[in-house]
Image (cartoon, rainbow, N blue to C red; front, side, top):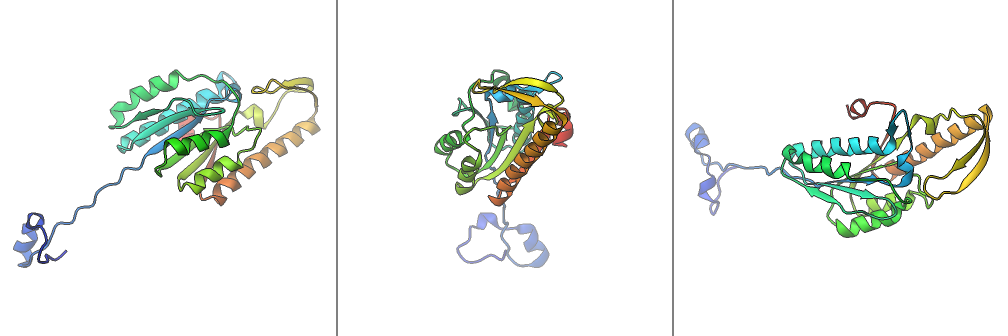
Length: 238
């Protein structure tokens, strides 16, 4: 811009003066680094999977990928495991060379406990009050519902992404006959008769569950994505 009386002369653009014969100031734009927080579900239900690929392993790989991308842009990155409450987080910054502590931290995490998204998000907002990007990686199997936790993220002003991770079997069950199903988190058991008709009904309910989660994200100004563990995580990210 044009120089005005009182401006710092150290910011004068002398090359512009030689060209135009007038005084101009150099204007600099500071790049803003936005903190990226990755909330990763470590509850017992995340241990389910097929073909050796559990939802939890898939979530770990996604968390590592997102952390790398954030560090690549020199953003401060926080990885926060949770189940019924938050676990000890990892805070890293300083570029992609800081990825190794993230990988080591993720490899130390284990599944355990029930899911309480509302309590975990409430605790997260208390520990990290500043606004930023929140990537919530979970299967969202919460007995108390996931709505209140998502609405808390909205009310705190975060730019958030709900990333639903599930296995192909959870969407398209292949088992048949009389089955005893056990809740991975509560241990509650139920005997069910799995027929083609009941499997189709279950699949419809699962699709409705995912659609409800997607609508909730969009309604609260966030974004939604769904990752199935039989698709390579590299393909999902790309």
